[in-house]
Image 1 (spheres, one colour):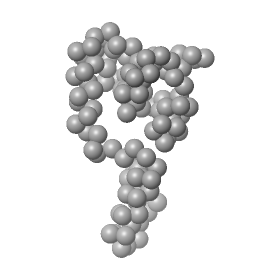
Image 2 (cartoon, helix red, strand yellow; image 1 turned 90 degrees about the horizontal axis):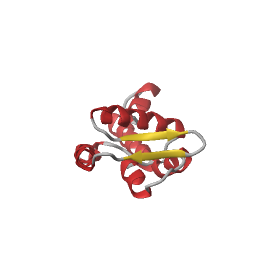
Image 3 (cartoon, helix red, strand yellow; image 1 turned 180 degrees about the vertical axis):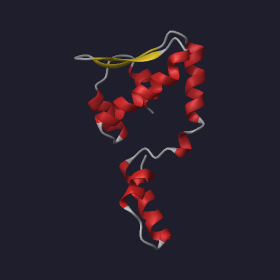
Image 4 (cartoon, helix red, strand yellow; image 1 turned 90 degrees about the vertical axis):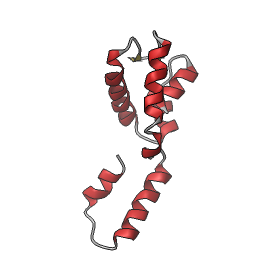
Length: 111
């Protein structure tokens, strides 16, 4: 979702706007960008984080970018993106578990 949004924007966007789009904190957005940049190390592409400007996707090689985007799409169904989806997932787990659950378990489920 981050890559798609940054590609469509084509210019600097704030971490606040990205966090609102993904329903996560700005800290989570910056952490996710670091992970995506780690994945893109083998390519000529990267996400630039520039203080006082924002966040921008830099694509130097279209083919490598498409390959990376396709690899993320195959995992898209496994990620819970919205607050409501995370809440629903926890509720479903608690109902089906029908036993005591430690709070650490619900934190692990939302990652």
